[in-house]
Image 1 (cartoon, helix red, strand yellow):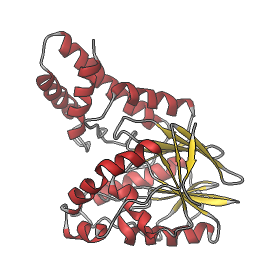
Image 2 (cartoon, one colour; image 1 turned 180 degrees about the vertical axis):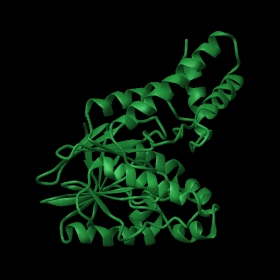
Image 3 (tube, helix red, strand yellow; image 1 turned 30 degrees about the horizontal axis):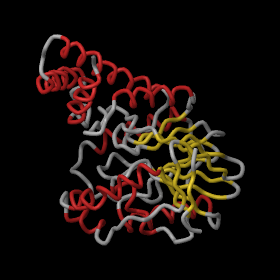
Image 4 (cartoon, one colour; image 1 turned 30 degrees about the vertical axis):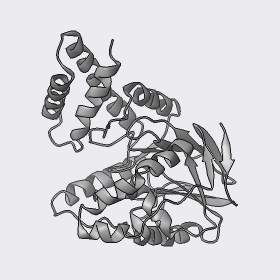
Length: 318
């Protein structure tokens, strides 16, 4: 690990009960038109003694926001889309751990995970993977422009957003001491993005998996995806034996989410390799794999990620 410093609620619920509640909420949200991407205040839930989550409510472009409160500081993970959402997150943080030193981190550089940083005070210590910093510098402005076209509400939330430079950067791993609780930062990309970062709350055994693990959804692979890296990330996550797994979007669950995601990514890898060996082109192989998996899981979101995952597996196959 190398680090560089640039400058200086509700009651506890079980993982099973929380997963059931968030699954029910997902079903309810599916019945109504898309909502504006606003972090919901007053919905924060405790998933472990030091760990809280503001659930996404199955609203697009709203992340599951993490709050880890220790005796010597509080860490926020993924502060939402734009200053307005960042302000809402800070008000929820104040209910959990008012007055403690503030740390913030992001699972990847996409705007719904980073743009809320605009609301955080200059004293907040932003800790980020160096690869994620570079990814934002190279493509963050274009990503903000692209997201701003999705709706007038999204454009308004992102108005004036710029990159906030990290206070501390790290390569591959970092460990944050919050007093009575510690958080492992793990850079695991290239998966969904090159700089994907997951967070493991050691004493609580809670894993914030970013977009690397999803619930009832395909995984959003992209041009930078390595299937080897993605499967290695699953290995790393499973070895931690988390009690609670919080994906960036969708229902909170347990370690079975890792096994489920591994299963269909291994299916993609095996099928793509077989089609390559049979002389099928990369384009046709990706299209076939997508069709087959969508038939197996017709209600799952992010099906557009199957093609990129299949292409990555095809490229890595002998």
